[in-house]
Each structure stands twice: as structure tokens, then as C-alpha cells.
Image 1 (cartoon, rainbow, N blue to C red):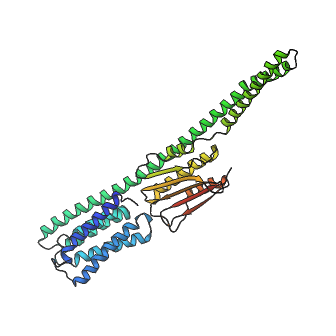
Image 2 (cartoon, rainbow, N blue to C red; image 1 turned 120 degrees about the vertical axis):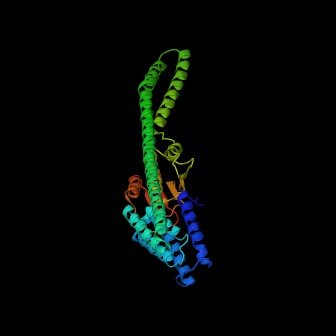
Image 3 (tube, rainbow, N blue to C red; image 1 turned 90 degrees about the vertical axis):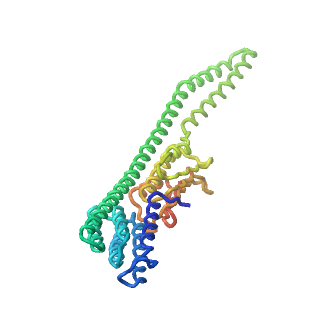
Length: 366
């Protein structure tokens, strides 16, 4: 189940505040200049437009801007059609705050200015009182607009910082795995050149001694020959394992995704998953791109990554988040790079944005 983030809670609080502000007029405590049913419809349409604009925020489409523009006009209509505005101008403050997330700064400033004109027109009483009230609401609108802009900027910077941190961690893991692989290869060469060479010489010397005279010596020489040959075989097996040993995949992937702020990531790696150095490095980069994509676009709170063996022996990586998905999926550079990395190992990738965002990558058994 997806957790509700701070931005969502703020939006719900704003929606609840709007209902509280409009409730007196809805229930007859305030008069309206139009039939009350029409006013109620305008008020409901305003709330729907605000919710629609908030839902479409990250899409950055014309639909989001159109929904916000509709909310702005409806907020003016709701305030101006009430005989006594009372606390209704607070709705305009909410609308101004939302502009910080949806439209450029200049457009938000224009909304604040026009809202102030509407507030001045809707306020009864002498001009001095109207001026004070309008100025007060103007300052509140400017404050909420600036706060929204700052929060949006902080959220963007937090995502970029998390993505940059993830890039550095993935690079560190890949470099560490490469360093361990180079060290294993160096040790393997040392064993082969030093111990392996000496044991080979010993075996040859014993082979010569076995053909010498002396029955008692012959038995011991043959026993030593068997021991030396077994030792040589053990050294060769050790060298082979050192050359082909792979990085510990679970540790590498866990190190990459550890302590990512704002995203709960679980990594599950099957014990029977084979991974040589090339496959491990590829999976690290694939997981890096999946997490980066989730941070920047998914609006998700949790991500599950699973690496296991498919029935046909292929290595299979599956990731799924609880974000908003992408029904109209258009892969960017990151997802295309992910697909190319898997294709370079002879595998394939499937992307599904219908319910959250799911990535399934398969690499044939090697």
C-alpha cells in the first residue's frame, strides 16, 4: 500500500480547509448573489479543478495548466457571487499557493495580482478597511506562493541529490568489484608462476627418481609422486576458482540502494543466481537506472527489486514500484540505455507502466 507523503498531506489539508471555508455559505449562513444551488455547483467545480490540477502536476501538460486556469476563474466566481465574502478570500490564497507547483513564477505573480483585485471588489465597507484587508491578503498570498516555490525547488534538489548519490555509489560498487577481480587474477598468476612451477619441477624430479634402482626408495618416491600430483591439481583448481569467481551480487546491489531518502527499497537475490563479473556490473548499472528513474518520475514510496533464476536457467531481474505509473510509456535515454546494457549480454527487457512501473529484464544462462 502506498504511503501518503508530506505534499499529499498538505494537499488534503488545503482541500479540507477549502470545504470549511465554503461550508457556511453552503449551509445558508451566508447569502449569495446567484441561486444557492448554482453557487454550490461552482464551489464543487472549483474543488474538482484544484484536485485535477494537483493530480496532473508532474505531467507538465496543457491539461494541468488548463485545470489550474479553470480553478482560478472558478475561485473568482465563487468569491464574487457571495453577498458577504467573509472568509472566502482564503480560497484565493489556496489557489495562489498551488500556482507555485504548476505554473511559472510570473504566472503565479499575475494570479496573486488578479486575486487581490477580486478581493478588493468583494470586500464591503470603507475604502480604508478594504485597502487594509486587501493588503493583508496580498501579503499572505505572496508568502504562500514563495513557500510553494521553495518547497518545489527543495523537492527537485532532493531528487537530484539522491540520483547523484546513487550514481556515485553504483560507480564505487563497480570499481570495487573490478578491483577485487584484478586482485584475484593477480593472485592466480602468482600461484601459477611460483607454486605451480615448483610443483611441476618436483613432479618431474620424482618421475626420474622412480626409474632409479632401489625397491625401498621406489615405494616412498611413488607415494611422494602421488602427493605432489594431487597438490598440483589442488593448486590448479584454486587458480581456476580465483579466475572465475564473481562478485557477491546481493552485497553489491544492496550497497547501491542503501539509504536512498524518500524511497523504501527492498532487494532480493536468489542464492542460486550465477553472476560473473560482466553480468554483476551490468545488473548494478541496471538497478542504478531503475532507482534513478523511480526517484525522478514515479512519485513512489517503495520499490521492490528481485533477481532470481527463471525455469529455463536465465537470470531474471524484476522491479516494481507503487508510483503513478506511465500508461503512455515513452522510454527516455536512461531506459534505452538500460535496454542496451541487457541486450549486449543477449537478453531482453520488458517495461510496463500500467500499475506502478515494472521492469523485467532477462539474461540467458551463460
